[in-house]
Amino acid sequence: MRHCILVKFNEAVTDKTALCAEIERFWAKSTAEMAEVESVVCRRNVVARPNRYDLLIRLEIAPEKLAAYDASAQHAAWKAQYGKLLAQKAIFDYEA
Image 1 (cartoon, rainbow, N blue to C red):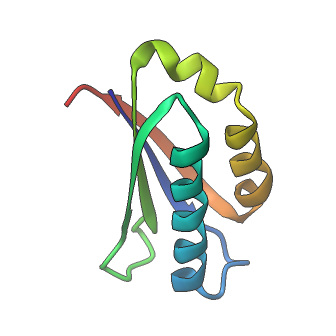
Image 2: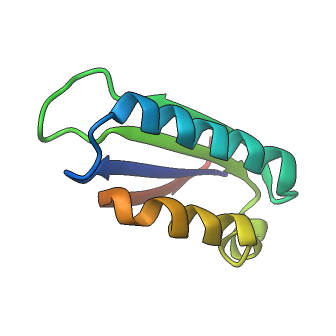
């Protein structure tokens, strides 16, 4: 299953490029440390308009492992470190 996290940064973020790079490193580390996550792909927005989201994070994860992922230390770290920088977030899951 593909678990997509679509995020829009809030006004506190002044350097979206640097933050995207930091988040990409965070999720690359997650892939190595979390057995639940098979792979992670991050895609940056290429159109700078106010009504656009800034980053798409797509995790490849087995549906039955989603609850373990939600309860993981890495997921908690994601929320603690980056949650305060998000104006909006959308979650979408689908089968490839």
